[in-house]
Image (tube, rainbow, N blue to C red; front, side):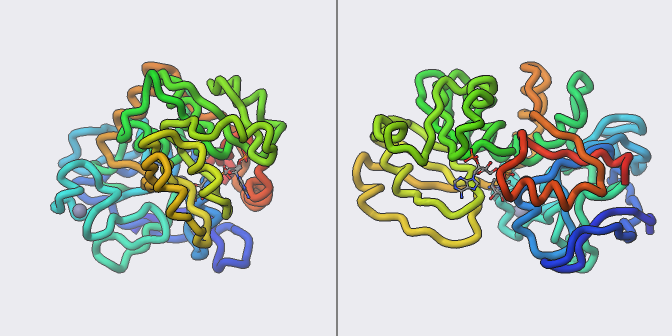
Length: 338
Ligand code: NAP
Ligand code: ZN
Ligand code: ZN
């Protein structure tokens, strides 16, 4: 086994603290890499067990004898997934996130042997099968690449699936880690982007990130003109909110896609959908091929996340700030501070 250092909480109430554990021994198809940066996702906060982190970038220390894609010294990254069945229809189409057998998560999960915990990325090293390791462009600042592995792909995937581009009016709901990547991608694809936010202080940032318009969702004078306005809304809000209010903003055949995952259910009125033949949908992270496609696009178009780099010991404070919406726009842990 490989002795590994990390940070973890022992239960839902206790703060994160130093934690030692063993990684599995690297096999012939595995990539073993040192973790340099790990992003902090709001999903980490929703979790109640003791392993976190799934926006992981680092440098390869060793590769198994059958590994073709990587060599020692290469940059490498891992997102939310470290394995899947590879045989079901979804896996065969590169949609490992929807694996019918349940994908293996990078954290709060077990390897396919059913007993080895996966432990996540708040740690100094990780061992992952080469098929689930992404190539990282050398031309981008590494700390700002880390959040692309979850915040990036989670917004990229639905924007691509619904073919968002020139001529579309897109509303991005919630300006946090996911929201700021949605603004960057939707505007890079040529859509007209409106930021829908509860924070007046984020107006200037929204414009800088690429939004043409900004609407304060707590102010009816801002939201009233948006009735039947959008072709597509990407909803990144982490807390309970009224979906009906935003569904009303969709034009004919408009789609409201939920990527934010509030912990409690919410009421959707049939009439909100019937009018204008609207749809409400969901989307989960992204598969391996599209994650690589997104990283390569970011390399070509110079797109990264806006990050605040923190030391490992400051993670609990970062969680507190994230709960208050005080993050511009992703915390990333510098693993050298572990
Ligand atoms: P985040 O950085 O904390 O951003 C969430 C944003 O939502 C906040 O910045 C805030 O934006 C808005 N918000 C928060 N509370 C609100 C409230 N009560 N009413 C209205 N707006 C509120 O979180 P994140 O990391 O982007 O994650 C967002 C959500 O996506 C989380 O639920 C996370 O678990 C989920 N997620 C899902 C997937 C997936 O695969 N579907 C992947 C990753 C994350 P404003 O200040 O602009 O209002
Ligand atoms: Zn995440
Ligand atoms: Zn599968």
